[in-house]
Length: 176
Length: 141
Image (tube, rainbow over all chains, first blue to last red; front, side):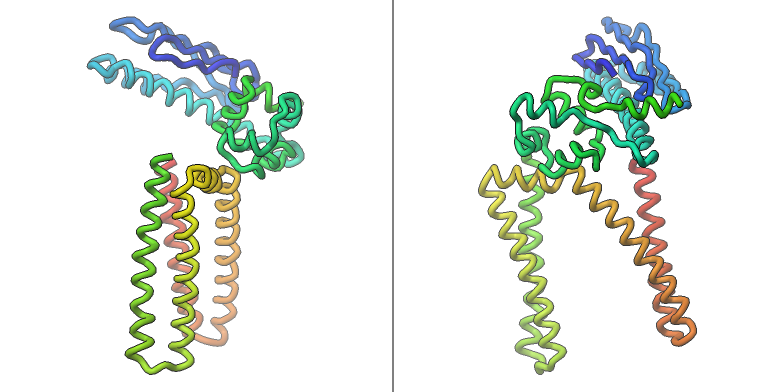
């Protein structure tokens, strides 16, 4: 995942760079006064299954939200929810796959990043809203962070999720 | 955080109501019923529950007065690993209890009809609750 940028009806770019995460294309929304979606191209691959973008839902939303004063905000919520669902599905799938394989876990660069920035586990835990024990478990690979937590940690360090969590083992396994 | 604060306040109020309600049987047992070993045991049991509730209420009241403590409590309660542990432990525990119940029920069938049917009732009720919760979460998630 390279970017899940979201701004008030301006443009969203959601691009996946890693195969195990998603293999979705680019989603671009060109908002205009009357028509809000010009082009959508998305195809998410979860494992070996290709999940098509829920077009009927989009049509429905188009009909519902292209009218009225609150069209923009509703549209925003709708698109955000789609991104959330897709992202969650892909992430959960990869995490589940890792856990099911048993011998592998999601490696993290949190200890290195913490040391480099002189941040204690306690401080990081407080900043991302979890207990210190959770950070410890993530660092030693006992526990796989949820997507919101992974996002918070990534945001805290100003990096992307994939720069902090290493899924290379999983990718290797998938390639085998 | 405000939402959590409200939730804690509700817990304190409910705890207060619960303690008051628990006092009633204690007063009744103490003043209107002849004390036997059994009633004393029941009174002690009620008092122990009340003590636990009071400790919890005190913890909540302290957290409500101090923002830092409130945040710590919030983190403790919403920590995803703790939630995962609770869920996992609850599920495993339930399966163990359920399995044990079935085994004990089958064995008891050879000795006592009453115990067998009581345990059968518990197994049926537990299965029913498990099924209902499963259906609920299937719809919810």
